[in-house]
Amino acid sequence: MLPIWSMVDKQDKDEINKLSERVGSSFERLVGIVTRLRAPGGCPWDREQTSESLKPFFIEETYEALDAIDSGNPRELCEELGDVLLQVALHAQIASEQGHFDAADVADAISDKLITRHPHVFGEIEAPTSGQVLQNWESIKKKEKRGRGLFAGLPAHLPALQKAARMGEKAGRVGFDWTNPASVRDKVVEELAEFDEAVADGDEPAMRHEVGDLLFAVAQWARHLGIEPEEALRQCCARFESRFTKMEKRVECGGQTLGNQSLEQLEELWQQAKKS
Image 1 (cartoon, rainbow, N blue to C red):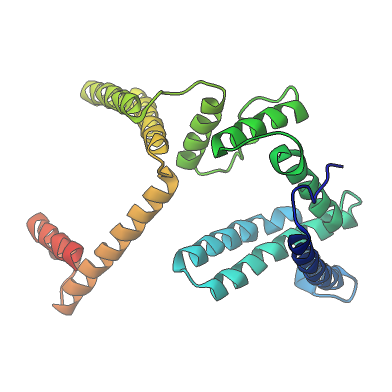
Image 2 (cartoon, rainbow, N blue to C red):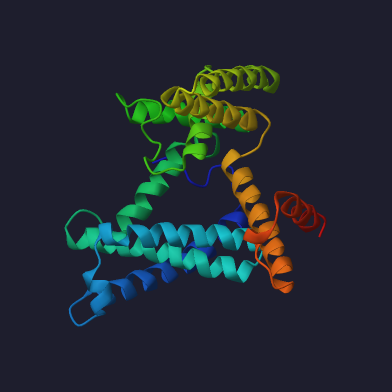
């Protein structure tokens, strides 16, 4: 195994050791609680769960953690990360009962992966920039998983806009990418023109095809500008919801509904909501 303490002074080693002992004890406690919940005489609900049945809860807890990050509330984030960790412990316990792996195997696997894929920290490789770190990461992954394509590790359920950006990023690491944001913008303009042509022709299959190409190109443009397209769209949705809710409340205060308003009135309400 590569030396974990390479280039770490004694004070830092002592601090890391103390934290590792505390975390190890706390994680051991959590695993023990989950094991008890799943054991005979434990919680009926927990005992009924399978990895398949837990999937929606895993997704929900992850999104709640993202909401906590956005809230800027550390206590809330701590709580939500605990809920995510519970999901990890539950899945590991279920796998342990089936004889596949346990929580220790999960922790060891990710620890070994982090050490192996950070040779610039735990080995002799130099990588002074994040770009070089990512290139090394992909190179190591390719050696570890020979025969797998560049996109094989991308989850099937990843949101499409986020997946588009990640695909572009991965392709870029092997040199298949635009050289600058301006060149990606040209591609966006090109795809928009092709979409307009499909719309003008009334060709629905072509419209679906071209709007997909357009969204993919926009995702790459955002990526080149250092913007996460999924996060940008999520924030846009949040702004739209906030403004639309203000419109609804303003109209309801007057004893009316949005459905009774003209387009001109709706636009005026929208502008008022934006200003507020």
